[in-house]
Amino acid sequence: NVKEKGKNTFQIYTSLMCNTSLERFNLESDIRRAIENEEFVLYYQPQINTDTREIVGVEALIRWNDPIKGLTPPNHFIPIAEESGMIIDIENWVIRKACEQNKVWQNAGLPKIPISVNLSTRHFLQPDIVEMVAQVLKEVDLEPKYLDIEITESMTIDIDRAIITLQKLKELGVQISIDDFGTGYSSLNYLKSFPIHKLKIDRTFVRDIIKKDSNDAAIVSTIISMAHHLNLQVIAEGVESAEQLSYLNNKHCKVVQGFFFSPPVTAQQLHEKLLKNNFG
Ligand code: C2E
Ligand code: MG
Ligand code: MG
Ligand code: MG
Image (cartoon, rainbow, N blue to C red; front, side, top):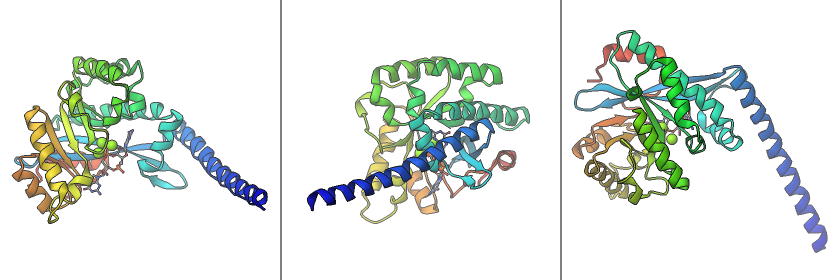
């Protein structure tokens, strides 16, 4: 009886495994095809200075324009791409494309702003990452200060390499932001010695700041004042309402990104926003 039950359990287990690994296999080969066929597109979300109401930066966010599934958000394929290592090819494309697009806006005479790209920890920890970034900037002829690299706290899994890479990127002249700040293993100790420029407060904290008795309000205002004391810029992500905006303003967080001002939009739409450049 026990033996039989064990056997059935085993069968269920293997068939589930097969399903998942088959789906996974399909997704992996679809991603590989997407890289070859250049099925990825970038959307661009503006970052707004709430005093001047001007665009002070833009984040490039990848989507997969799958011929069958349509426009697919990053959460559906970035994790698999990270695990399989394909993320490196994908992000090399993202970095080049983002720099090229920024150069196109600059050449059109639009206000010069840095463009942010998301770099996975796996990619960030590659030995040749700095050379790769330098090469792209050179080929695209974009000044390094107009590229902003977003990494997450998980880069601290290899602290020695992280510090070396951060220092080299700083010497290169690109900007560095810590994305989703507060959701990872926050190493407040390292923060003071890291050569970084910005903290991006994760939107899960911003979501509930105006709720009564919200711990998130305390967390957000603490992150803001800590950033100021450490001489770091601070950006609030996921700002959706005027109430959230005024809370953040009262705490002297001057740069925000979120649906309240704009969702991620196409390159052409961002061109128009830069032309007008006033969210007042
Ligand atoms: P992220 O870097 O934290 O980007 C912000 C995400 O929040 C974007 O989702 C954006 O559309 C969304 N967002 C912005 N404002 C609001 C708001 O007001 N409300 C809400 N609910 N959401 C808002 P998206 O584009 O789906 O990207 C999700 C994540 O995928 C990104 O989070 C980033 O971690 C990852 N990702 C995107 N592109 C890349 C890439 O090239 N490489 C890597 N490794 N990850 C990427
Ligand atoms: Mg980001
Ligand atoms: Mg992120
Ligand atoms: Mg984020």
